[in-house]
Image (cartoon, rainbow, N blue to C red; front, top):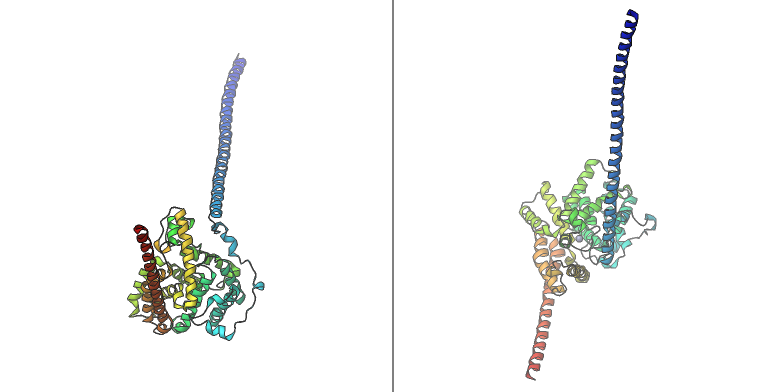
Length: 435
Ligand SMILES: [Zn+2]
């Protein structure tokens, strides 16, 4: 009995132990299963999440493609061959330096290049590139900043390729503005007043100041809610874009004339160039000129703020300096500008956007377009600069006054012609009434 009892007890105990063991095992196994399940669920969830993400991305991608196609269609339809999507392609120069013919500039050309009377209409793009290159050499910028002459050529080529073929805002305008800057540097002996860094900033900002201009002004960009206006929150969208394109070009080592500058020097050139390009927004004209007027009677070249303000006014002067040039050089630019304005106002009319009267082909004439601009924008600005550089009176301010007088005469003729026309038609209606 004892044994059997003992056995029984042992059996019972064993059974109990077995049971406990099974339960523990089951619990373990369940725990493992739960873990397995957990892992599986987690994996499945991750997979699902990934799929959702992928599917989601597909939707985004499809939507993006759809938008891109829509934009392309719109761009193609609007005969304006501008397309910001293709910008990056243009950033690399299309031609290489090898195919950029070496023009020899005659002594006469080199001399003429220093004067505001220079006639840019006589030159082809390659010749203008050679002239720009000459200016960088002549001002000592290549030597003083140890600029690689081949990089300078490639950079200028790339600049040329990134100006669009607009009636006005094209590479020739870029050239004229830079050439006027060069002639002001010479005429006002600016190299005696400014550091070479300032001269480098003035020239480079002039070269870059309208890069990739689409031919439609800031007002259009904002009203039409273009990609540029959205990107820059309506704040000088074009000028911000010109600047961004300029530094996209510098980000390519092949075209970076500043590649060997130390970071501090590059930062200074970058900041200076940005400030000057952004100053070319005519919406800021009053603000900038007022700030300059406050400094000009007590001007200090040692005051950085004064110098920056002067540089801003100088690039503004050059940007709108066509009327400083001889009449035969200046006048075709008015036609170019009006052509670009009319292109914009026509588009604004078809798109149901507001049209500025000075751009409306029904309302504007060459004399009316020029008189107000010369009298109230150009002459006051150049006369303020004249306080600092009296030598510009003869070379720049006098031609402006003559141009104003000429356009006022033209307007009188226009008005007289209109009067005659009006009387003629009045007589006609009177005559028809009599009958
Ligand atoms: Zn410009």
